[in-house]
Image (cartoon, rainbow, N blue to C red):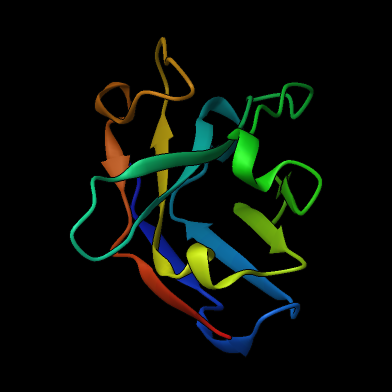
Length: 124
């Protein structure tokens, strides 16, 4: 089992940047595929980005391609989401998720473990 704790959210002006971190407990972090999802008020949770166990596969949702970058540091048990050129429509609670088994990157139901979320607010 793994526990996930997100940090790095906050209030930023449009065009600004934030880096989210997700720290995982345990000694088998490298065996987990990791994802970032977000949920805006009144909307369903949506996929943002995914990184495979090896870090070689990093799919993104179309709306963040070229602006967001997902990465992982297995030595630090941490996954990151670098968010640049932020837009007001990026405002949401951002969650990280993990799974050791077969996972469909974009499908939230295939992830077994979730963090508590961190709020990102982008002002116009």
